[in-house]
Amino acid sequence: MKEKSMDKSVTHELFCRHPENPILSVKDWPYAANSVFNAAAAIVDGKTLLLVRVEDFRGMSHLTVARSDDGVHNWQIDPEPTLRPAPAGHPEEIWGIEDPRVTWLEEIRKWAVTYTAFSEGGPLVSLATTTDFKEYTRLGPVMPPEDKDAALFPVRFKGNWAMLHRPVAKLPSIESHIWLSFSPNLKHWGEHQELIHARRGSWWDANKIGLSAPPLATEEGWVVLYHGVRTTASGSIYRLGLVLLDSEEPGRVIRRSDEWVFGPRASYEREGDVDDVVFPCGWTVKDGTIFMYYGAADSCIALATAKLKDVVDFLVKCPPYERLRE
Ligand code: BMA
Image (tube, rainbow, N blue to C red; front, top):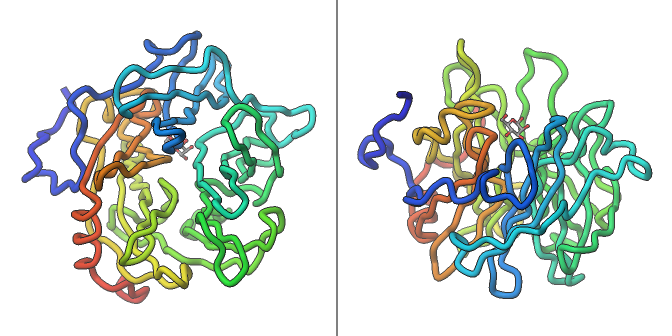
């Protein structure tokens, strides 16, 4: 059995797994699917809404909405796919759409949905907006391949929208970092800058990192949850770390955790279509508690919670971000 001890004193983990995990799997689905995982999360009309990546038996993914009053039980799942790939008008979606993140844009009173479109040229970042999670307006690709793991900030900075995303370096010797880009209109993006760097050597987040859930506003700054991909002789291990960005200048990294704050330990995280993966695409905050929804082993959806205050207290005690110490 691959399960490791779940004792918090052993794991150092900030987040606690829900005892009823996994909270959603293909058993719960109203139609046949291979796996349900990597879901965006939001509070909509007082309910928790997950926009779930569903992989069909061809290997291609679409997105389907699940809603719950308490964010744990009694999920009402759309009886058929909510957002399907539309390759006729959007050839970049030919091999499916994956890993959504959602952000409420109060200024235009719309949800922004960033997702990976799997094009013949590789995965890229696409953006759509919605007001009801039923009808979607596609803005199309906003970052060319290979790029994924994107989410918007909910507000503009000096007149521009901002997005975190992760382009992939073509050369194996170059690390893949998280970038920050800006746009006046959500459609055209520029002022690209490298922001959070993959570390090197034996670090848990060496060589490849990516954004997990969208940035969360707190009094201390933007809390960013990211994943680090550790390559081992028997595959990759996806674990999670935290970064704090300046409230007014998201291009300024203030703190970064040295240790991971969550990693695969439970059996449903350690064994599945892709072993040893925890992959959150969304989190919600209710009464001071963060609900982090994550894909587990690319097979099901699990929930872990933490007090927002504990996360912020932890982050402000993390080392200042200095590129040289990596
Ligand atoms: C990443 C993404 C995720 C997936 C993870 C682990 O590159 O493609 O969708 O969960 O790999 O397989």
